[in-house]
Length: 170
Image 1 (cartoon, one colour):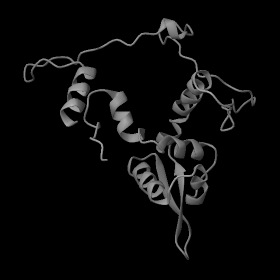
Image 2: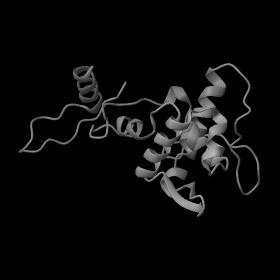
Image 3: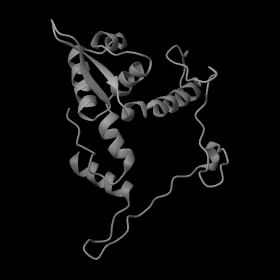
């Protein structure tokens, strides 16, 4: 089933899901963060070849991976994370933290660590204004409205617009 594109929505969460929201995509990025570079390396997750090919192509098209040849005959390529792709390390780390707390099973996949000292790190939110580390019960998402202009009708908030769009496409 083909999904509707979320790329033009005003919500950055929706736009991000348009790029990395497919089931296997973040597992491919996770494996790249752990050192996978070649097609065969990524197959260790159990992903089918056709799906892996499609996901790698999209990740290259989106600028998350750079595809470069490593062998001429036969021609073979490796996939290297770009700066944009490396920026997903905290996303993968946050998903790992959530999964450790809210899902069952053992964690054999990864351990985020501080490069300078080697100790495990945690993903912590903090207030950019006062620097205070935050707990979940100190965080709220607020709806914001885009500024209105004389040329445009009053803006819908991002979540309502996204919901209306997806409902219309269903």
